[in-house]
Length: 475
RNA sequence: GGGGCCGUGGGGUAGCUUGGUCUAGCCUCCCAGCUUGGGGUGCUGGAGACCCGAGUUCAAAUCUCGGCGGCCCCA
Image (tube, rainbow, N blue to C red; front, side, top):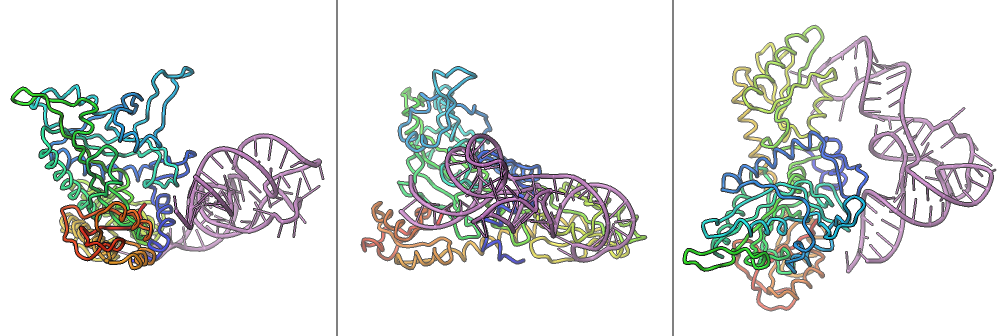
């Protein structure tokens, strides 16, 4: 499948797809706010059902906190405020009267959730707490907004918040969070690099931040998940104390980690092509579309079998759709391909005669005949295969877009020409890091999570490299 | 943070420089009917637009200012 426009005019491709594939309407008259359409919303819900399930399986409980946060509580954690106050929307009035205490539309929910944690946590027996919610958050973005990617209302923000008795337990929680996210992105076939963000790009109020980045077709990285170890920073501000088994009062250790609708953009872009979307079967709103090919005089059996096939699949738990509109088959093919339906089943006079259906894969265009009596198993098998092949293909292009460089010019050249991620040596000093960003025109993603052997010399100061660092043009 | 470009039916565009000929052209999508049906079928008919506000003028899609919205470049 061709991927020229997809790569060369990615921004245009993405915007066209949002509309043509019925994902979002971007014409809402407020900057940075967009409308989810029914098909897009189904996709969104399937994607977030996956992460919900993974979180619940690992002992997280879903909660739901209010949107509004009183100013005095919001402002308690100094670092946190510094990171966010430039982009907070404030509710200043109730009706015609001015509010005594302004209310913030949450830009994230630490300051909304942790005061309640203070009420819930009394003793070590209350720990750990592992909760999450899927909510909208608001950020007054001043840069250019982009549907699903840079929003003023993030409509779908999954944020998990945990509290633990010890630093070690919080560290273990970070590891668990990373594993959950890995499994999640693997389910979607979205490739990623996990890095520890440099200090100047650490979440406001965190001890350190990890982040998952994937690559858009234009070679820019997209941050699709973050995991933060908050240490006791918030605990000390919000008085999150518990009584230890021997009767002492201690502050808890916390973590939080988030994923937004950006992940949907990622899934759309990494698997797409010039025709349009190619959705992973696990989250595709329609997994199989059944298209009857009704030649004149032979309509009845064709329609009848097509309908039976669709019913059989639906009963078997496959999300199948019968397209019995009175338009030409070719038009239906394009229609569903653009919307990313992973598998198409055609049923024409010839198939009726041979007691078979013709299956066509969205990802490869490959067609094959399936005997009618093997339908269910074969469809399941094909969906599995497509799922695996999509993941493999996405990882392959991700790896091909990851380069090595040892000097500034090479790194800049790679990012200018091809985009992608560049790995290079770095002494680890912030000063050199910032200069490296400035001179290469890239952003430092960080050092690889889990550690990595370093070699070479820092291209800025020529000291021996303490670590390898990853750079990229970012969204 | 600084600079530039742009806004015409649902989508893409012509017209704007040189205001009147615009009753706003074209492609596509959409609707109805017939036809057709294994990769965007053909024909006929139909519906649908000058971003908002103020100003200049006898006259504004066209010129000026502001707002809102979109896009791009540099830091």
